[in-house]
Image 1: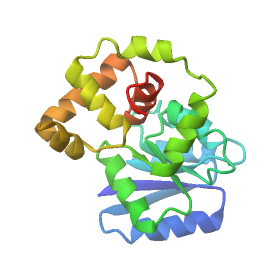
Image 2 (image 1 turned 120 degrees about the horizontal axis):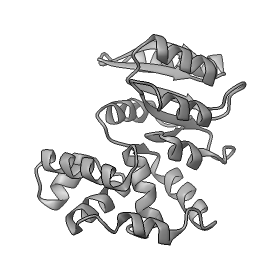
Image 3 (image 1 turned 135 degrees about the vertical axis):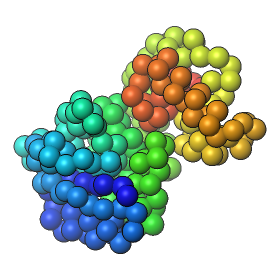
Length: 216
């Protein structure tokens, strides 16, 4: 059972997402929160596996909340929710430790799929929005490509192959099929990649790979 939390200051959005998540027999919404402070309180009280966190909220926004949630003894996986066209800080949320992001109007089936993927250790980035967002920040030159290239340099050629596919949003199963590897071997590679790069999750590794020009 995946224990979920919905964090949004809009009551209708909270209720809608809660009803959707509870419709999946493998997901249980154990907490709701109206802002970042409330989310941290709830995550301290309840064991949360996956938190869906809005970006723009009063008192404490989703980016700041993500940073704090990631420091908890048992940090939840985090999916950032965004309207995208209005939110300019999703890149910062991902860099803060979010495991992915979704548009609020994403198809309900995809939201459920995202929760399952993230709970299993994969990332979930809305395909079109992710590319547009990352490309936008790449054009501003942040972070520096040379710094990213230096950080990925210690990786083996095979690990770079895995990282390149990971950066495209492929799951462990997808990577295993593409590279002719066992899924357990892919998991081991991903673990070593995260450790070598000094990042906390697949999304941060993917952003670093893109910064380094490992994938388009």
